[in-house]
Length: 240
Ligand code: SAM
Image (cartoon, rainbow, N blue to C red; front, side, top):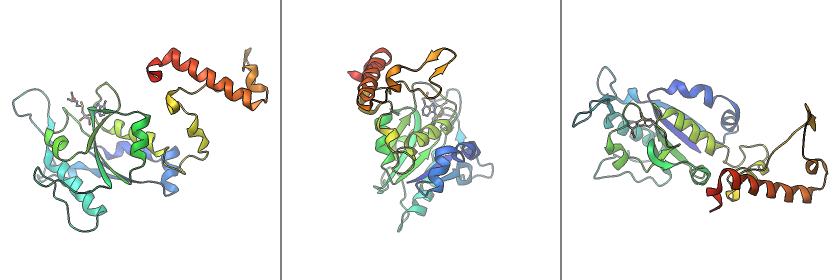
């Protein structure tokens, strides 16, 4: 998978993309991630990416010009052939690429959506700032808007990193033990069962005897029961 990120703060990504599973996924050749500074696509000498909203109101809105230009540049790099010019009349025609706008107004990210996106060959992520982006980006450029939850953050960088983390670990071969995905929370609409590790007794707090029994059939049944109990208590909405 290839992920291209359009942002005014590319440096924010470096520590996250350079550590842990994402770092290993890159080293294994499972993902390629490229960062683009939106200011490099502006036409004025001040590299301005925002302007006042039409109709008045507080704050600034990100202008469409550098965002369209950055997406076109990425498509040009990744597609053989002609440069797709994105406008109201002629939308790009690139089935393999999905252009995602991070937005609190978008579809809420969950495990199902992460799984769907993890199958894509190419994602372009657009990170907004200020009061958000000019509506024409949403209307004529983005394929989908993704929200990471019902709260408003300052910019789309953290949501983009959350999205990348959620889907990179789902790409086959990224996690060392693929079985670890099978029983995770949200698989079969259940939260994961309680997990314990050594020591069996810690400050008088003990691990349930069942897990020490060595009877794998019974342990499996116990875990399923605990997963259902936990889901009923904490997230009954998942069971409906
Ligand atoms: N004025 C906008 C609104 O009310 O919908 C919010 C703009 S927010 C301050 C600036 C940028 O942060 C957005 O364009 C988006 O890229 C990003 N953002 C903020 N909250 C987000 C969320 N929950 N999920 C995804 N992106 C978010």
